[in-house]
Image (cartoon, rainbow, N blue to C red; front, side):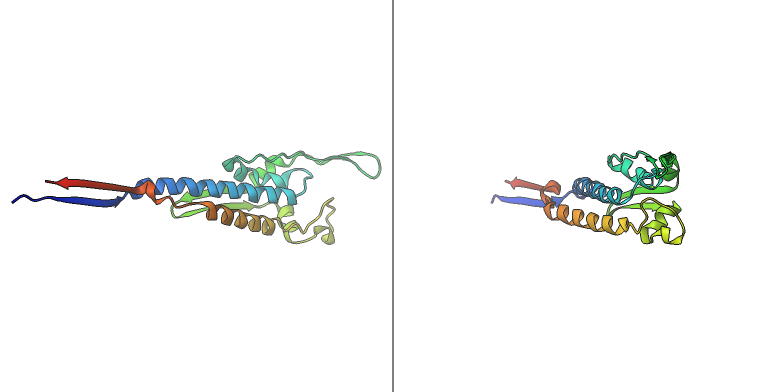
Length: 174
């Protein structure tokens, strides 16, 4: 008597699929951070450039360019006023990091620049400061909302291509 049959199996290669998944998630994250940065930059005015420069560390990690030119103006008396250059101080007084380790993907941004942090929620000119463009900026709220929308839009287009991790094997038995 002869034995005839087939043996078939389906296996899932988690490492292959995770590499694909990680790549997709990091791209979604970076793209959404660029949206966050664009909104933040649009809300933060420039004088010395210090406040906007707090975003540079994060921008560098996602390939986003931020142009920062300290202001030179003629004041009401007709004299030239130069703001000074606060870009290096802004960069030094901030943090910007991505975390991209499965299963969490995100970013962290922090500023210790007093004027930016105070202007985020308040009009500091009411407290005796003399800023050309006082707050409240609410840039984090606007940027966070834009980031969330960008992630949701991209996630709905992201297709979990499970085929990348599946291997089908068949063998004939005689």
